[in-house]
Image (cartoon, rainbow, N blue to C red):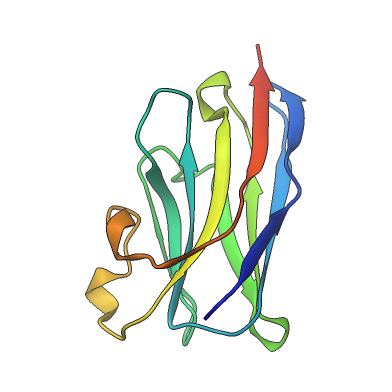
Length: 125
């Protein structure tokens, strides 16, 4: 069973930046970042096909967030710039089984099986 752990959350002012890190016990073909704000459903932020590095972003993250990996270390990163108060949420790293590339998308939250405990990101106005 894959274990993942997130670090790097914190509190910033609007317009600021944060970098989240995710350490995975082993690699999976598809990994990603998700978030959940109080009273809202968990939503996808960005996903990556670890073999090749293709990335996919939710509209809310496009142009502001960058997902990257260090495959040698089984590490995943999320660089978040131009943060907004609406980005405030618990951010989760997740991995999924399966090799269907078309399903490695932020929208496919339910397909991800392995989740970390989350790291809180708070953006103040």
